[in-house]
Length: 90
Image (tube, rainbow, N blue to C red; front, top):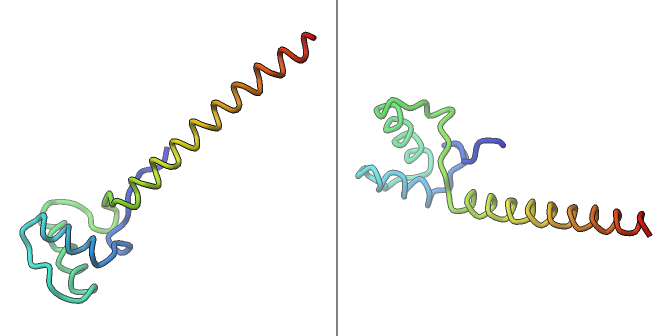
């Protein structure tokens, strides 16, 4: 399965501010300023800001929906195989 998350450059302003606030950093400014500030914070934490993935509410929701959909497909596939075997025997 692919890694889950959003790169720094794809975070929304609201998400940038939340990440900065969680680090007790200034969360005021325009998007580019917030990105620069968070980039510096990640570097100070020893993380690579170009590859680090942030989990956002959107990502969590999408993953949940995908996993639910995947589960439903497996269930349908299983029932179809069972129905096919029953039909084939008759």
